[in-house]
Amino acid sequence: MHGELMKDIKIGCFGDVVGSAGRAIFQKHIAKLKAEYQLDGIIVNGENSCATGRGISTKNVHFFQHHDVDMITSGNHIFQNKDIYTYLDTKKDLIRPANFPSTAPGTGALTFTTQSGITIGVINIQGRVFMRELLSCPFKSAESLIPYLQQKTNCIFVDIHAETTAEKMGVAHFLDGKVSCVFGTHTHVQTADERILPGGTAFITDLGMAGSLNGMLGMKKEQVIQNFISQMPTKFEVDTHLPLVLCGIVVTVDAVTGRAKAIERIRIVDNDITVMVEENKR
Ligand SMILES: [Fe+2]
Ligand SMILES: [Fe+2]
Image 1 (cartoon, rainbow, N blue to C red):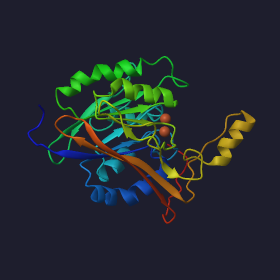
Image 2 (image 1 turned 90 degrees about the vertical axis):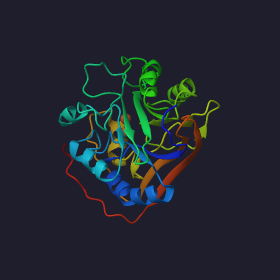
Image 3 (image 1 turned 90 degrees about the horizontal axis):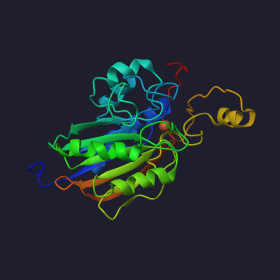
Image 4 (image 1 turned 60 degrees about the vertical axis):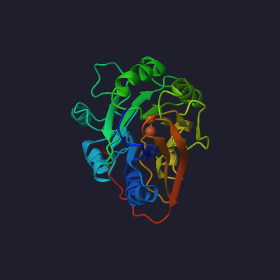
């Protein structure tokens, strides 16, 4: 038994925050959401939060910390900015996919403690289908981390950063009953399949993103389309046009058993935000 408090906890999980646009809508709404849902903790995927939309800087980490984020997850873009390696190695509140070689900076699982004194474990893994196929098995990587985290808590959240719906769903069913929640990230498009699986694990195939709604996955659509047509290297920049979208879930978990009690999808579209256009540089 972990913790003396018989309490439900509510954790907000938000999908890939893309560049200045993603940060702008996150900044505008997160305090309100935290109060409205009485969130005990906030988990955010920050792999696209830097100025270029690819990677995360220590400045971005400080931004999330300033906005009450408890754990930042990531994915395939995490090693893009070398300046984040040192921070990753502090193993504080930023994790990278656990199934990278152990020689990579940082770690794939960490815990944080809510103000009410509940410990939450968070695991980050990356899919292999249509992605880096030489990574270790994401299923087995996540599974192997669970006994370690269970020494501290039954409340475990898993970010499966993957391209295909099947790989995300497979991980969720594989971990059903062993963790509180499995959420997918990376595709930046929110899916409407949130539910609690038979074993008590909350699941959504993809959280969606924070960024420009009518760009492409948060980037300027013209550049992405040009890349498809020309098949030549193309510069991609963060789209800062309105409206912006902020996507995520709120999961209610029994803090003692770690079983999910509810999962609710959040999607906010906002047409009234000032977005800074940042130089497309790291
Ligand atoms: Fe992403
Ligand atoms: Fe990604």
